[in-house]
Length: 479
Image (cartoon, rainbow, N blue to C red; front, side, top):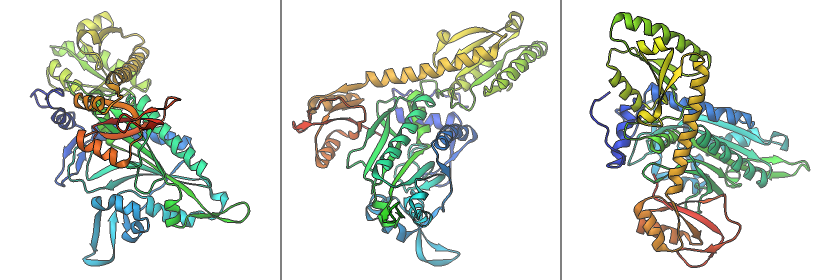
């Protein structure tokens, strides 16, 4: 770990973010432009998200499958709006095995088309519905401006694809998976996201409706952290996904897709990180507890390590992810290193602690002396488990308080300008057109993030057009 001080997020948030990614050992730069190497610590964080999502997917009846990385170009062209939305980002293979290919192959930007083709073969009757498939995969989108985890040319994600007999069933699926994403964001990543519907301009290319979870980052910008799309019958028509109903009549399916990527790792960094580095929510932290033994002499270290090994065994037996730091560095260096890596709880134990039967616990979510307390070594597993739950709840509370303090209701366009200038979410009644939306973006840099699903019962007056409006919208600068 570099001894150079971390750039302050209040001075240069972007530089602070980039430094954390590399100095906290999450990732490394790669020789391929726009791509990153994910190191074990970063990949374990992704695995934590995978596990949290995957068990929820399976609990709601979804099954995992895998589809090819290469998609025939003609497949994408069969859904014209989809191609138009993705064409600038496509990576296309034209030569294979030293020969020009008969048909170019697109490196998967998303899999609606190739999965749609498979669905058309797998679905024959109403008895085959609903078909609920998820894929864990990598995708490629040729990004011009990249940032680790947030926007890279290649990234890891999951993409769910389902087919249904009715529009109502497809809509219920779309919203169910949005709830799954919000559950993971709030209860695992401690990010208090807002569930909402995207505007027509912001919806996924080819979708009927797009839903999103939006989080507020530490610089008061928004991050779209996961999306769920009701695709209507657009893709089903393009790929002939049909079924015979109970009356033996041929019907067109209704389909959905939904995806969450390692962008959520970026969201965790930017929501919780501070002047000292990462702060990881305990439920996702690869290492929940680090034990730092302290001893000046071989004799002291021997006595301390006896206690450390016993504590470690007890914590592991309680399913706590624990690491003992026996590296040949001074304790202060180790403390700073683990704070940079965001480990939720640090246990310090020296000869006096062994004699007293205690250990010093330092919380990552509360800096300084306020975050330290002495714990008895007896019942350490129960005490540490309770402490980890406290840290998890407090991190969610801190992030929620920050978001709420920086969300402002606006009644006029000048109000919105003021909010966007100081940073934060501007919430107001909206009845504007796509052209109005683009004008707001051009003038302020803020985009229409979503119409929150939680809406007041009555309507209001649009802050931009002065027309009657039925829905509140959130505008903010975003990643």
